[in-house]
Image (cartoon, rainbow, N blue to C red; front, side, top):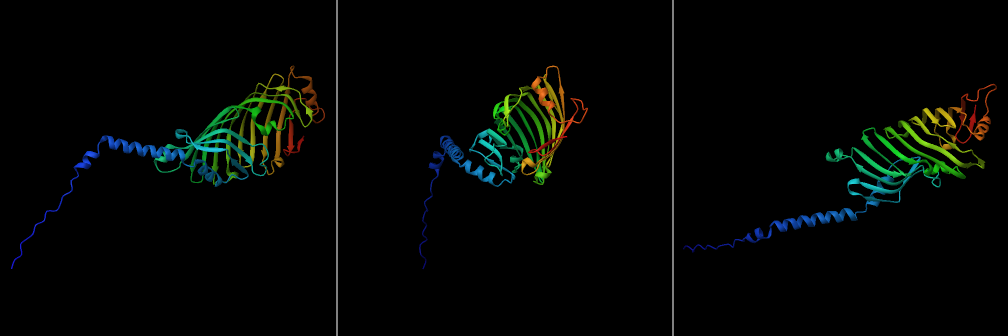
Length: 307
């Protein structure tokens, strides 16, 4: 006995409604929503917490790095405000470096390869500007630092010695930096420094009133290798007085125990004030030595000795 074959037609869903729903307007609205979501995510992301965590992992001993706030600055990268670089052993002392703002962003060439190959930065400090680039290598890194129009009178580690008076000068320079193995002793810094119109006006240091002193320009080459700083062809030129300086300084901790080995020459002129001549006459010199004979400054930074 054969049973009749039953044929049931299964319903076939129609997707024609989907084609009508997915039109240009819907796609554009979806993309707009996605972009808007990403923008709000970037804006509300805790960038300050992220940057502080990265900075806390940096080994900058014997220095300490801090800042007031950090935020995402779009094409500028990350913007750090109120940045301070201080000696870790003396956090209450004036910072060695202060930046009003510092913009840091990674190199685009490295990001396209999925790597952090280097950084570029641009900052505002002491009334001037500074910028540079750092390339990361397997055993350290190398970079360049350029700065211009820095107001010497705003540099607190120097002005802290002044009980009264003003320190002036506009600083510019360019330095190359190399660091191997992540050790400070392997650091090498070389470059040229120029200070236009440096001078002291109405200054009093340690209770001693200093005569006004103004130079036209100070210029020199500096070379730092590890803990040793070499001063080459450093010269302060002016109508009142000219000074030539060369030698070495070996940095130690604390900073006041750093060793000095400097050779200094003072060149007076007809315009040299009587007060400056009297002050230079107090410098101990060998018998029958010329007034412009070079002197040697030895000892330490805290207790220098004239020879």
